[in-house]
Image (cartoon, rainbow, N blue to C red):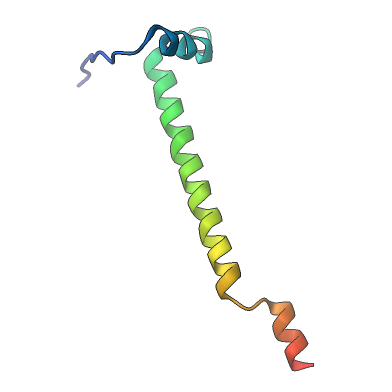
Length: 69
């Protein structure tokens, strides 16, 4: 079930959204795309944070090999 909602924006924000919108694309489609891109950026950032934390906490294979030689 679809319900139309109004989202108040400033004129400047509306213009910027309009510039992002592709020909034939609805604002709903644009907002859906922007939400998806935002979630993907958040996921990528979280993955980067985990990778960096692992790097700081774990010993690299090269270090382990050097220690056993």
